[in-house]
Image (tube, rainbow, N blue to C red; front, side):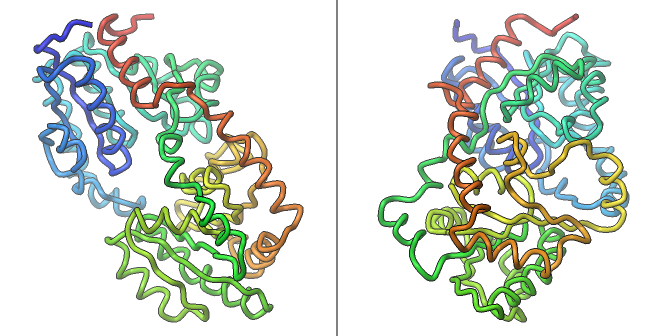
Length: 392
């Protein structure tokens, strides 16, 4: 491809995970197009290091929970309008929206209605395979190509009548070296007392929903005579919340801070108690058997119960295609149910063996061949730019 200095790509990422995806994508696009490519849009620190000057700090959209969203709605709507106006004014060769569908899709719809010639690529599919499947057909009107992180997503889009979707791979498959143990770390993983990881969530609201029940579960487990070394990895912005919330736990965890320490804990862990979410796939790729749990507020629970259309909310179960990981949601998320399930995984039980066997298949299931996710994603963005927006 010719290195055209006039190329302009508008990217929108409003969460840290999307910021990391955007940064990796920008690196490959610059390799393909040369230094003359111009990146504009919304992003965080890692995208800024690749040359993006964000329209606004993405921390302005760090809003969790339906009540908080309602309170902040005027600001959210203003930022949506501001971003859509900026895209239209910039007239880029392509718009790439990255995750955060409640924000990015509203921007994309406005852009499509005002500037229908701008191709739009959606990097990270909304979870329409789990709830609100009607979104797939709606997306045909304003998304030209979806870049899926999960191998089953292209078929879901085909069945639901959505826009073209390609599996480009999950970023975790590029990080296996930091997730899996060395020979020395494997010895610790298999040694006594076993390391038990506790992962209550990555947001303050999640942490607060899970800390009490997780602490009571671990106390019950220790009271039944189970020996384990307890580790709780977290990030700096949650450290104070975690330390305060675990101070009264009957078993005190070793709290480790930061991504490097978190990955080091994964490499020696024997079992995990985790809040459901992307972390379940991370644990599965690490080969760590787990028990998962999730609690939300009453309003969220009422809505989700009526909307979810999959047999499991555990991402690793969905990728594997089999419910090998037990999940305890809402009223089932109790110490009385969590403790026995964890106890079974601390031993060489059928449940533990079934998980380990299933996790061993993930490399093949999630393989993208020799190309990295960011390279595959960049190639599709460039192809969409060349061919223009899809009209059928």
